Image 1 (cartoon, rainbow, N blue to C red):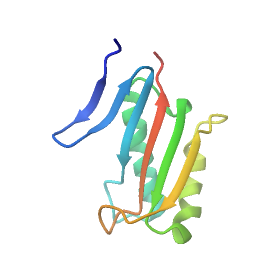
Image 2 (cartoon, one colour):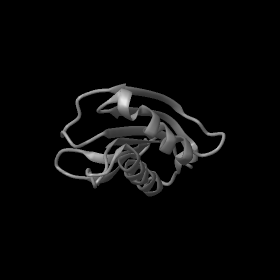
Image 3 (spheres, rainbow, N blue to C red):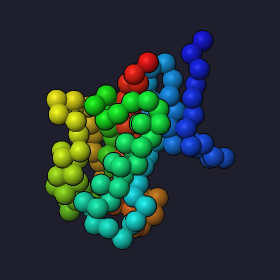
Length: 119
C-alpha cells in the first residue's frame, strides 16, 4: 500500500498531500494582501513552489491548476503575466480560472495545483 504523506498539517487541513506519485497542493494565497494582483500572484506561486519542493517535485511536473480571482475582468491579465513567467517552459498544465468570492475581502487570487512526484 502506498503511504499518504501530509505536509504542513494542522487541525483543519494539510497544505499539500502526496500519494501514489502525485502531490495535491491546497488553495494558496499571498501573505501580504496589500499587494496588487501581480504581487499576490508572485507570493502565491512562491508558496506553491515551496510545497512542491517539500513533496519532492517542482513546477515542471504540474498536471493541473485551478485559479480563483476576486475580479476576473480587472485581474486576469496581470495574473496571467506572472503565471506565464513562472511556469516551466514546455510544461504547461491544464488550467481553469474563475471569479469567485474568496475567504477574505483583501485576497485577490487563490490557486491550487496537482503535480506528479519524482517517485
